[in-house]
Length: 314
Image (cartoon, rainbow, N blue to C red; front, side, top):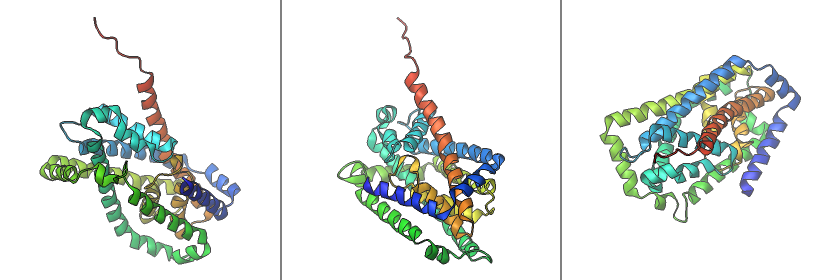
């Protein structure tokens, strides 16, 4: 918990040092509404694809209904954004419907497979776009990436702290003393992989859902760049997506406040964007990625909680 608070505080301090708050407010006040609305639509589409993919990762004979699976997924996103330590992931594992359908171990196997698919897709696209992004940081009139790191030593410390935190979390791992390896038997993951490999239709659905979810995320950040007057660049949008998702790998403050903003602003600063526009983009990106998820997940959670019990016929 101490590491989490330190990272959040360091991120906020760095953001305040990178931009003038008054000018950031001016950029936010002049932001274009149409790209923001488009980004919200893309976010909802991406979340729908991720929910559908998670359901496909569950054993077919044991998976909950489509409606129940979507409810569980969206409520978990709501909890991840309003509570610290990624409480939504624990909800997804411990949810009554999921536990009743297949058990916690099978649900955890689906989460591990989900993370692996995300990591593979994000790594592949980032590897393709990184050379173009690095070339963009050396364009005339832009501060080279190395120059940004020299000018902003706090950013170097932040990246190192994030890396250490990720390593610590993965070393700790899992839901108990044994970590993920003990919680998810190797046989379960092998069976899951064999099921994916053997079912072409299921594998195709997983591929389409994964690519669709990440395409939505990349496009979301691309259109948000236009909302605050930042350069329209697909490599920049991809690197922002990669950086923010890296920042969210480990448990953090509710909604990853501070850490998310620093991860979103850093690529723009490396690309030569002013500090005020970079921070305004980070604030806008965080709001678009968080508020709709909180509203949708909160509404689904409230509907389930407040819904009167069904009256059984005599």
